[in-house]
Image (cartoon, rainbow, N blue to C red; front, side, top):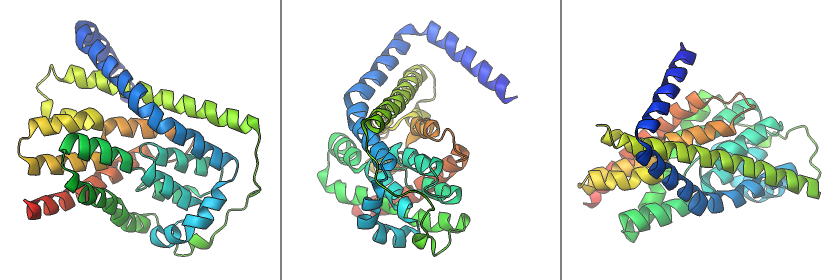
Length: 304
């Protein structure tokens, strides 16, 4: 049944794109420009660097510096603390990529990988600051509360998810049985660069696809649900649709917390070769988005 559904959907989209070439071209152009001008220069260096740190075992030094605090707060292993750091600072889908790589290389267990994926794949502070607050809200005084709400929500949800995955209290003391020596060589650099370009190309394809869907969706009476497709195009759409800033603020933060369906698709592409579930991840992100919207509504109601 699934295969038939996918096939019919693909055929339907094929003919829709043929019937609306102008919208298809516009969406593809917008998506590719977004990827080339913003996403690629922002994410590609982090893809290469995180790949390099993992493949050379250099993450052990980062774990020694940042690990003690992160291990106690999130109940993660030393290597898991690197996934937390990358997932909170580097943006979608770096958290998912790092978690998947740690699972593949047996640096963390599958159960810890599932737990990490539930809360450490988030929007980067740079994107929140520059694009959401400054460019779209145009209210710099919203910067601190917006960052606080968007990062406090996954942190609090992690306390729930750790119970679901039954993460032991002594996991921070566990050390994986593996070679911890530092390795370096240009073949490692080459591998990290090629793997990073492969992943950033996948992301570009998903951004273009969802931008096309967003453009085609304007022809249908589904405008209220279009922002969920992709946050970069969805956020301006929310602010334009909802003139009441209280409503718009809550919806923008909820969407940012969830990441949009495009971020879900990107994260799924990072999980290939692991047993990490994208369905479970999506449910957990929706729970986090619900918590975020509650905090956002409470804050904006008190302030306005």
